[in-house]
Amino acid sequence: MSYDVYGIGNALVDVQSQVSDEILSQTGFDKGIMTLVDNDKQQDLLGQLDANAFNRCPGGSAANTIVGIAEFGGNAAYVGKVGNDSMGQFFLDEMRGIGISIEATPAANDPTGTCAILITPDAQRTMLTNLGASGVLSADDIVESEVEQSKYIYIEGYLLCGPETRAAAYRAIELAQKHGVKIAFTASDPFLVNTNREEIWDLVKGPVDMFFCNEEEARSLTGHEDASDCAQEIHKHCENVALTLGADGSILMNEGDVIRIEGVSVEAVDTTGAGDMYAGGLLFGITNGLDWQQAGKLASHAAGRIVSQMGARLENKFSEEEIKDIIQ
Picture (spheres, rainbow, N blue to C red):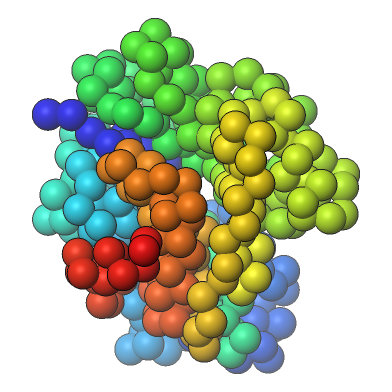
């Protein structure tokens, strides 16, 4: 079977809860940022919240994007490490139920990773991540035949945070280059760019064919303030660039062309997965015959719909007729 996209990422179960700004401030964590925490710290925090208000779904940046591609009707595969526990089985069942191929053997000694997502009234999400088994994803878990059968691989930047997951990312890149498969990479988080700027530049200037980032990440990477200047600077080194601007839409760069994509006006409830779903819409589009303008419009609508609801899974999927109307 051939795939539109083969995703590589941290396999996590997201546990989301709406909280007040006061409760968030009491935690001491920075708003809108992802912070790595140990299991005890995460469980202590979750124990202070209303368990009836939790929303649970398979997560992780690349996993969210791969789910988006599958929900649009694309063919997708994913590799990520879960534990041999109920959370891990939940993750695998949910992903496979959507039609995603996922074959990595669960870790024997590590629990499934989880991400506690605290959502404040302004729709911002603060993520507290316990990597668990996801942190032991290794180069041996990358399946060459699945990479070879894909049009793109999609790598989340969070993999650069650990030695084993970094090795897995570079193994996927090596195999993609070997088989002529295009490589997409997402910056994932401003903190990641701040701490891994040189390595990310090396990837952008080297094997990466498509680079995804938001405005803050682009500013950190390039040192420029204006979003257009950021996109132009990155495009000097990378064939394709997708720079998201929140409610203001996005900028796509392709073959020297600047493609402006309008945002979709919605009432934001939860920004979790907005960038991931945008990437899913764009990658689905360009691997299924849409031009860049059309794929960008679909991506923008996908991001708009995901922020208008709780969680990183579409409650109302796009029908074929809706997609046709969007891309006209």
